[in-house]
Image 1 (cartoon, rainbow, N blue to C red):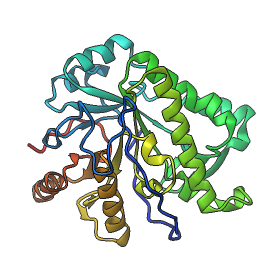
Image 2 (cartoon, rainbow, N blue to C red):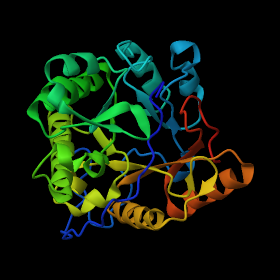
Image 3 (cartoon, rainbow, N blue to C red):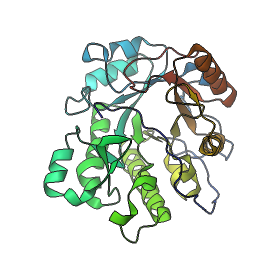
Length: 314
């Protein structure tokens, strides 16, 4: 792909049978809330929506997002999705506009345009696994390997902390479903899911030790809530295509209902839900915005390219 586009939720290859475990929500500052806890302290109200922009920043900066009325924004670590990182003063100015700002990056795959890709191919090529058919310039990785943590994930978390982001927005937890099992003998889908949860828990612990209150928000794969440790490790979840699939196609498949049920369960655990659907037809936009309000989700209806600031639902 040519840029850091949004990811599409893919239906489960096989149904997971997971033992549900009792879970308690954990606030960003470590204070626990009950199973039916409310939204995070300081979280935007559901009517505010959010900004999700990963490319096409106005004049390469963040001033347009600062002017937008939404009070939460997800942006890439770098303005060019490569090595031109947003500076601490830029993030500080965006936060000064009243916004909580999360840094986007992937934890289960790597795109060829990312700066880490070439060095990994050169001397740790075994970390790079099968190509993602939906995104031919992207590969899934051995995300459980210590080298992936040392060379990619931890440095990205460190950059987000150093730049002054309020948290991280973690894409491709769904890698556990998409890794080619022939490339990882002995790894079941359940084991792969557990390893993904372990990585999210590790990110959460590492970041919060350095900055209490730092948000951790994975995207998609809400079914991971059934694994011990996951719910306490996250502050919210980003969910694509709960109501409309890209673009302007109603989400009516079985996995749409399953995703919605798992997302509601996380909401009821006190987690913030950042929903994003891809629609352009006015009727679809209105209907989706209404669903966000009914479900008490923060929502944005935008383009699949994530190259603009969508109008808030209002």
